[in-house]
Amino acid sequence: MTTEEESAVKEPLDLIRLSLDERIYVKLRSDRELRGKLHAYDQHLNMILGDVEEVVTTVEIDDETYEEIVRTTKRMVPFLFVRGDGVILVSPPLRTA
Image (cartoon, rainbow, N blue to C red):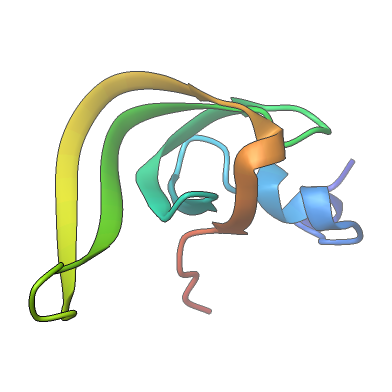
């Protein structure tokens, strides 16, 4: 395979293959977001991420004022296994031409 063929995107998972060993953004169900280095993945979008920043956003309603209270919780995780059925979106790193 030539370098041009290796970097071609012909199927959706090719874009993820090109993102191996790079930082990606993953949006999950339950208002969870991950940013981390993609180490491995499979056809089900199960992924292993390293140096992960997890952001969880929760919205609560104040009982007295009925105002929305938005809270975000962040944590760092050295390694994380992400199950593919919870994945909504995967964004590869920004590429410059």
